[in-house]
Length: 200
Length: 200
Ligand SMILES: [Zn+2]
Ligand SMILES: [Zn+2]
Image 1 (cartoon, rainbow over the protein chains, first blue to last red):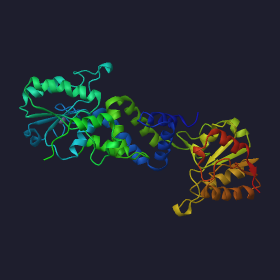
Image 2 (image 1 turned 135 degrees about the horizontal axis):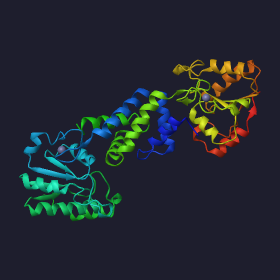
Image 3 (image 1 turned 180 degrees about the horizontal axis):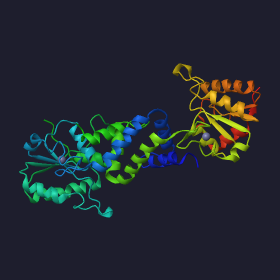
Image 4 (image 1 turned 60 degrees about the vertical axis):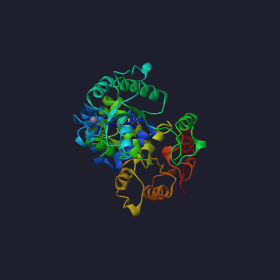
């Protein structure tokens, strides 16, 4: 034994958190016990509730404890005839922070990955196809990641949209603003070059 | 809003953990929601229990959910007439891993720090003095950290022991000066323990 059974168990369970090994878990446990018991208890309660109550928005699949997320429940967002497809709720949050997009989203909760058993059904693409059928969209924006899987997923969804006569766009990929050409990987640079535009 | 209220709250509360900022907290929340809900729930339950049930050993002050920790409850450890003073339960655990010490401990849960209002009473030194009076100790081993505060604390406790005619030793400075016991490798700590010398 190193610690009491309950303390050992706490240190072990904290290691479910990504990036947390035995040493960090031990430091976390002692920190909470020594200085932050009320906040530790509050974390325990909200974690328990979150794990059981947070599900997916019935409309866009993002995480929410309600039937519809705030964006889907907002009629102003529905009035915009654009739909933006992202891989994760974190990607949705990143796009929201640009304040440049006022339409709705569809969150895949992943990307096509046949080897892991993740196909169109797992990404809710039947639901997406249904939305493409029902909503008079002017544009479907594909904002999946510029990875092999993200590109393959975008390609697959682009076909769904084209079959239904919906215009499809893909977000631009290239050298990050403020970044240096020299430090950017080859794939990004290729995208950047092939996506070039005339200077007015 | 960035996420649903409950998800926002989870991301905020995760930031009570040391070293966890908004980005890491968000990654943790998504990781648990996407892949580890049952283990997330187990963590919530053990965290809740640990915060309310883990107290201090009545004898040595280390963390335990029982009245006495396993070491204090073990008559074999009581038969050894040595007592080792450490600053934290993590230091106790580090010493236990050397397998070179078979006596009991006294855990200060800190060190003297007058500016932070931490004096002899906060470190339980009245209880330690009582043990020095009651137990026929052959040796009091001072294993506080080799920092300014740790040395000052060792000096103070050495006087308590000398007043009672108990032999005092200090672990050797194999531990790097300015370093922390908890972070030192086992070999260094073993040298440090076996190289202890009487305090003049
Ligand atoms: Zn939604
Ligand atoms: Zn004890």
